Length: 126
Image 1 (tube, helix red, strand yellow):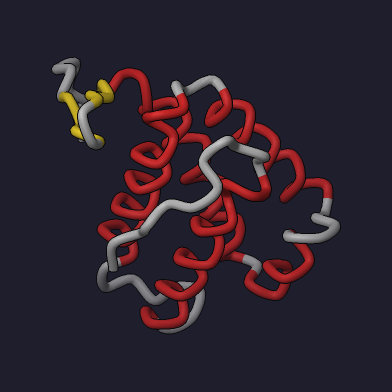
Image 2 (cartoon, helix red, strand yellow):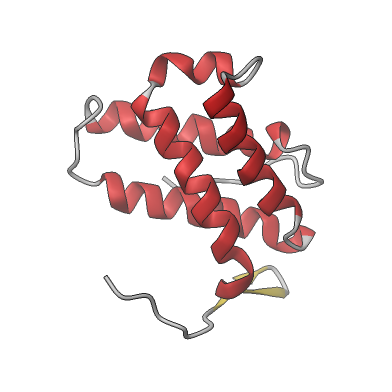
């Protein structure tokens, strides 16, 4: 796969979020969600006391999300969900597709609270 350098705007209300602005947090958070899919038993723990690897992945994701403008944070989180759903489409390596979709949904919906973002809830399209 080749990555495009084209800066595609995302619309959020009256604001525009550039792909380059949300790309880094999307990549970091996508890695964190992938960790959660590989070890689903740790999901419940990750909301309270995550293990070292999950904690590091979550911290990197949160650091990147906190660097995004407030009005673009939800768009970044939604893009994580969209990418993960496309990536998971048809793959059942770590359980059934429906189970993976549920894991992605729960992990992504918890990100605003776990990362202490000003945006507390994002509607994730499924």
